[in-house]
Each structure stands twice: as C-alpha cells, then as structure tokens.
Length: 337
Ligand SMILES: NC(=O)c1ccc[n+]([C@@H]2O[C@H](COP(=O)([O-])OP(=O)(O)OC[C@H]3O[C@@H](n4cnc5c(N)ncnc54)[C@H](OP(=O)(O)O)[C@@H]3O)[C@@H](O)[C@H]2O)c1
Image (cartoon, rainbow, N blue to C red; front, top):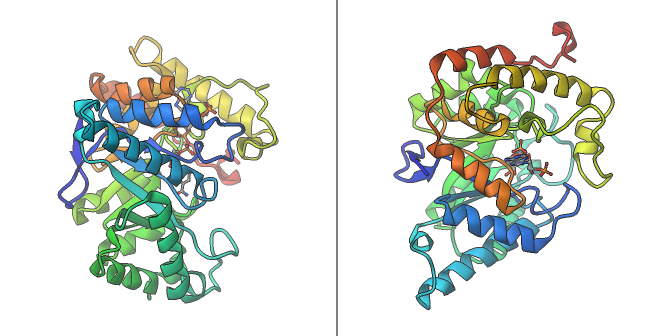
C-alpha cells in the first residue's frame, strides 16, 4: 500500500480507503461477519482510512468500525496483533442536515438545517457510536451553493475543533453542482472535500481538484465504480433486490446505458494488464490532487482486490488519455440523460 499526504494536514493516508456505506445497509443483505472480516483484511493490507456516516444503517456502519478498532487494540495489547495493527487508523464520518430536502433547496437557511443544537447532538451520537472522544474528520454530508456566502455551520465546526471534539473539518459534495464547494476551499472553511470522480464523472478535473491542491485540501474520492457498474460485472439484465438502493439508481433504462458505456471502457482496458475494477481505481489515483479513493468494500475478496491496486504499476499516459474519453455528461442536452 502506498500513502499520500492528506492535503496539508500532516497525515499520510493510504491510497485506498474503505468506503463503509454498504456495510451499514441499504445495499441488500449484508452479514456483519462479512463486514468485520472485510474491515480487518483492508486494515491488515495497510488501509488506514475509513469513511462512514451517521446515515449508513443509522450508525450500524460506525459501530462495526468501532468494534474492529477495539478488537485490533485488544489483539495488540495481548501481543497477538499483527504489526499492521499498530498503524494509526483515521476514521471520517458525516453529519447530515436535519430532516428535509436532499440536497437542501436554495430557499432554506443553513442555520435551520445545521443548527448548533442539532449539530452538537448529532456529533455526540457519532462520538458514542465510534467509541471515541474525538472524531478524526467530521464532514457535513451535503451542502448547497446558497449557503456559501455565510457558511455558519463551518464556523460552528471550527469551534468544535477548538473544543477538541473533532480533528479535521470536511464536506461531501452534493451529487450535482459539486463545484459549489470550491468557495469553501478558497475561504479556508474545509480541510477536506469528498467528491465523486470516476471514469464517467470527470468534471472535478476541470477546477475542483486543482483548487484543492492549491489550498492544501485533502481529497477523498467516492463512488469510483459508479456504484459497481465500472467493475464490469453487471449486464443489461442484472436485477437488484428491492432493498438495494441500486434498484432505484439503475432504474428504467439507466442500467442498460451505464452497462453499454462500461463495455466501451472494457475495450480500452483490454490488454492493459488491469481488470475493470483495477483500471477504475487506478484512473482516479492518477490525479495528483487525490489523497485517497474509497471504494465501497463488502467482503474480504473486495478488500484484497481493491487494496492491491495501490501497488500496481502506474497507468501509462496513453491509456490515461484514452480513458478520459469516457467522461459522461448525464444531461439530455448531450444525449446522455
Ligand atoms: N454523499 C456521500 O458523501 C457519499 C455518497 C456515496 C458514497 N459515499 C462513500 O463513498 C464510498 C464508495 O462509494 P459507493 O460504495 O457508493 O460506490 P462504489 O465504490 O462505486 O461501489 C462499491 C460497490 O461495488 C462493489 N465492489 C467493490 N469492490 C469490488 C470489486 N473489486 N469487484 C467487484 N465489485 C466490487 C460492491 O458492491 P456489490 O458487491 O454489492 O456489487 C461495493 O459495495 C461509500 O462506501 C461511502 O463511504 C459517500
């Protein structure tokens, strides 16, 4: 596993982090035993960055992470832990806005959706679930451009940082208008940004990633497989169980269109030495602004494959160039819906 600076924050994070949404739920049945084994394996392989959220199974994902970290501490204190157990593990979690529209509408007030009382109570719950008295990185789970001119929730998070409840302050972009966080980076409000950047969604390369580098902001890349389709394992008839959020994400003709595009990626990766999953992660890591990429990991096999990508040879520039053609503007103007 290779490590990269997390922005200017004095911490080296593993190139591959652990995306812990699916182990919380909402992706169909998930046995805790598989989740715990996957977490242990990823940490054994040198992963030192885990991303979770309040909403991932209403704290289930956070509690599993807490259990794994405790098991590793216990193993270490009894002398049965591996040397990898000594490495500091950095856990990032998220506070969502209080109940309401997602993402927030332009007409709402930041102070209503992220009020001080609500944020303090939510963070107290994160601390309890993670079994810690200080959260390494607290991210606001979503944001809206409408709040940029007076980003009061970040003033509060800086205060909570002073109080010692959180280490770093971050934001996760809204799925559309991801560039709305650029002003927050330039204003010094955030230490990290979590962003969607993958073979289909390359817009962050236009500005957001460069600004992050200029400002020393850590970049956490989420959804590197576009929810799995970029691993190349789906076909046009793949069915998702009703309790898997992908039944909705890939509803209608979306699955067929995404699979068609993934098959085009496959052609470019043929004979490259990378599998589809490896190529998808390596593509993300080729951008120098990226601190860590956090594929969702549900089992030991996925931990093995995904963590292994860090040590694969760098992507040849000609291949990188070819893969850039797969940028997909999902708007009807561009016949992409
Ligand atoms: N708003 C936000 O802040 C936000 C939103 C989304 C995600 N996130 C974070 O980003 C992380 C990553 O995104 P994501 O989990 O939504 O999507 P993703 O990384 O694009 O896809 C993850 C899924 O792909 C499958 N997979 C993983 N490794 C694989 C491999 N090597 N080969 C084949 N299949 C593999 C797994 O599902 P199956 O095995 O079921 O196919 C896994 O759950 C999340 O876990 C979460 O931490 C944050």
